[in-house]
Length: 319
Image 1 (cartoon, one colour):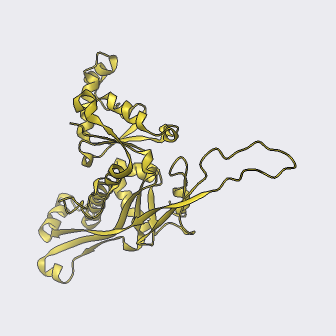
Image 2 (cartoon, helix red, strand yellow):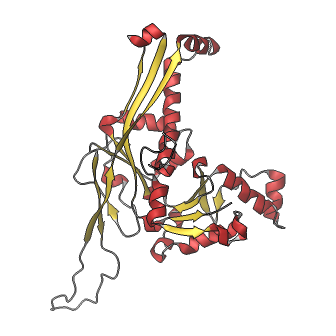
Image 3 (cartoon, rainbow, N blue to C red):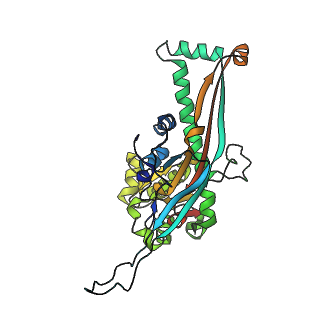
């Protein structure tokens, strides 16, 4: 991904807008992306965001991702020899971001390090393996914070900043799940969410994906299995591994969503990261040497923003 500009990554964020960056410039240093790539290997939802180009790397702590929109209805009949009676105007706006700093801290005792090295038979470098594991764990937490972060949460790993879900609840499309099947998750909820999308986003349905917890996914499989259809028999007799789409759209599992189900384009969910603050190091000198521990720590400034909240549907109040 090196050599790709932010504007190229975020060129088609919504159906009516062009999202770019205020000024030219290449993506940040590979150190940031390298650690997230480690995480994306084990976090499928994070991988979807990567492939959608929704990771915005910047050197600023706050700013705006530029939006340019022309809308529709701009063409007119051509008449030779006359001045045009209509001129279209571009609308300029921006998606604001303000990064918040967070860190991860781990301590490993010398005894644990020796045990890990012996268990691996000396075939794997302990420091490298542990750093890789820390990156993967951090990747999970980054996505969790980005999705369900809430400054009012009692969870210290979530109250760092508001995530996408809080923003959706403040200005997105919300479908009351309690109005169908007594609030028990079923295919009717999926149809209701699709129908709630504004018309201009329905034309982009092929780019939409579902986001829900593993528990809600299993509940849906039970609903399908209970139907008197060949599809239900297949789930019971052959397993559910092949059920990876709802209404033809991919399914992302993120347990932090709890009872909430989302319909959204991955590229509409943007993670903004300050490349100058990304750091992941191991320290074993000084006080750590005296305590016989290795201290792993990392820092990052990040914000979760939405390009167009009207292009997302939340199914809420499910059992």
